[in-house]
Amino acid sequence: MRLARQATIKLLFVAGSAIYVVACSNEEDASRSDSTTMGAFAVSSHPLGPIPPDDSLARPKAMNQVGVPMVLTRSLLPKDNPQTPEKVALGERLFFDGRLSANGTVACASCHDPRLAFTDGRPVSVGFANRIGQRNAPTVLNALYNKTQFWDGRAPTLEQQAGLPIVNPVEMGQQTLDAAVAHVAAIAEYRAMFRRVFGRPPNGPDLLRALASYERSQLSFDSPFDHYVAGDSSAIDASAKRGWVLFNTRGRCNLCHAVSDTTKWPTTFTDDTFHNIGVGIVRHRVVALARQAERLVKRGDTIAVDRAAILSPMSALGRYLVTRKDSDMASFKTPDLRNVLVTAPYFHDGSHATLWDVMDHYNKGAGTQNPFLDADIQPLALRETEIDDLVAMMASLTSPAYKALGIRELARQRQLSRTSRPQRDSARAFGPKPVQPKPPAP
Ligand code: HEC
Ligand code: HEC
Image 1 (cartoon, rainbow, N blue to C red):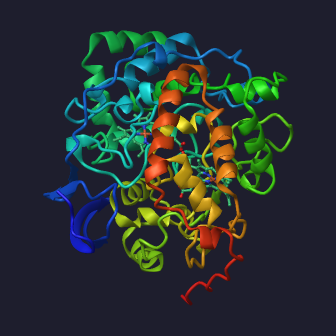
Image 2 (cartoon, protein in one colour):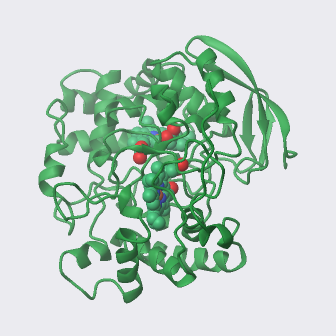
């Protein structure tokens, strides 16, 4: 059912121990317009499917793929949670096990499906009881390289990240992490596996360690682009090569999706910091939301921030929810671009359907009056063929496991972009850099 534009819905959410009812204005948005509000939560009319299979796409990946930064990778494996094959196997089991959720239906893999490069293909995720969240599910591939986890970096490690969806009411719906542990501890096979791996019965911290170890086994390199950088000049076509030049010059992509500081070897295409690039900024009145956050979300309370980010309109505040600094207003983490072709739709709110839409966004310099816009975002004056080249470059970052999916996806996105370019604004793209308004006085 389509919600009327500007309809006011009431959203109940729980921050810390207090329960709040937040009135929010739900403006037109493809990602949320297919939802109905049932009880306190928005519920999707496209219900969650069965848990994806734990098949060959889910297996731990080899270290010796072309492009893997070996020294960096080894340095990122934590000393207090060493990788062992048994631990990774336990983590893999848990990642696909719906019994971690309150009613047995939602696993990590429900939203991080290996067949979709560990995403769910939805604009925003749907979880426990088909409740709808506010954010797009990022891939778990190469998540070990992220300096922080989540779009707003609210979790410093994979271990700490893994605890949050389990207790989020729209994700896995448990009251506490221990409730999930109790489900696991009731199963003899798990008791034996925990004993073998950790030398003790199932418990929360070990469960999170196993999940994180599994995620650290998900390296995804060996793309045509990696082969190109390694010296095979025929690995990518002329269009992708032109795209790579644009990426580092007039496209300005390298300003944030940087190659590593210490080597010319591109690793994960992110500066590991947060920027306001103007996604969703009009839709939400961020200053009003920031005032709301001051009242309702306790600073430094990670559970409260997690709930605000996943199930309230304050989600649009991004990094600000974590740091409360004006300079972080509506800013989000620069994501890795590996396998980006096969992880549509795009941005923290899934608001852009194709890589052409993403390019239109950047080409018009975000295109909105936005006092918090990153100074590095400006109109790019890229011609249509140059946009195609940048898309080809991004498509060349697809790992071999997703080659067939990538071919289908590129054709699908190209087809869609021929009839639908909702973000295109040529006047802005070829116009001068606009002067942005000053932030409103506090
Ligand atoms: C209902 C869907 C859903 C479930 C279930 C779910 N996730 Fe996620 N996951 C998401 C969404 C949405 C985000 C982004 C949220 C945000 O940034 O605020 C995310 C973010 C992440 C990230 C951060 C990646 C990055 O690039 O920052 C990791 C890692 C992750 N999830 C792993 C897990 C694990 C492990 C589990 C199981 C314990 C799990 N997820 C369960 C939807 C889900
Ligand atoms: C000022 C820093 C900055 C610049 C410059 C920049 N990006 Fe980004 N990029 C980001 C941030 C931050 C996000 C996440 C924004 C959000 O979701 O709100 C992002 C998201 C993306 C995404 C979506 C990925 C996903 O998984 O949803 C793609 C694709 C992308 N950028 C490609 C590019 C390309 C191509 C260029 C050059 C034309 C570029 N970026 C320039 C910072 C930047």
